[in-house]
Image (cartoon, rainbow, N blue to C red; front, side, top):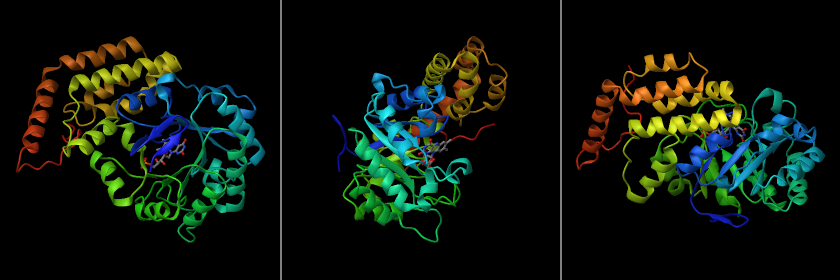
Length: 355
Ligand SMILES: Cc1cc2nc3c(=O)[nH]c(=O)nc-3n(C[C@H](O)[C@H](O)[C@H](O)COP(=O)(O)O)c2cc1C
């Protein structure tokens, strides 16, 4: 089923999941560049938006290249959510998403995020009020339930559809699970079968092949990737390559990795200022370099500076490091070999053990 966000129509989309402190403007741009079809802001508190908190407003920065993009809001008071949706809609997103999935105590135990899974009538009333309050499509993202005792997600999804929610992103875990155990995609498939709105499946996709297979196996309308993209934003490009060719894409070259890191780093510094920009890049740096041989020592040097010029210099020097270059060539050769008939084709971009 095609998912429509105003003038945008998305078929078999690969979505970047909303992630606090991760899916900010620089990372969204990186993932877009590598093939993410739809992105979301980090979640934003409705109360903070109403208070006009600067940090909350900054999270709504949208650049023209990011469309289609949703702004995700959360909260416990319906009136505040309505007002926040109107404020967010003015910032020019293509849709407003309501977060009913956040499991963290300071959100869920205050009756927001996944907390609303314990008060379904209020959850549905919130969906209806927000959907009525803005002209943009309103979507929701949630989990299977509060815990395994009572999974009512099929009924919840039907009710959401009835009150005007236009698409549902479903993480296949309960709130009680947090991030433990495995995402249960069978439940996602059951929900998909039960409703007429598009369903976006989410949970534990870390390999391109899994993303492609999720469409076939669970019949979802889109696949959303979170943690699997933090360390490997190439997953979007590689999943599309796999879908189109049936082949596993070669791992990103050393140059590609460093160039992407530099691009991300510079955007991060421009967006957050030098010190914060450099420090916050670290959660991505180790992932982008993961799998490269002899890299651990280099990584520990990188975390010792919070200066852009020094970081850039170190990254550029990595490109010239013969030992690493040779080892990367070796990885590439093994990939080619494994792609040949009879070769074991299961190889990822991070196939080599670190030192
Ligand atoms: C660091 C981090 C921050 C997150 N922040 C949000 C958020 O702001 N809004 C939201 O709906 N989900 C948030 N999530 C949940 C993800 O969107 C996603 O549902 C979850 O990570 C499962 O998908 P995955 O297995 O592909 O990571 C966050 C997850 C992580 C790891």
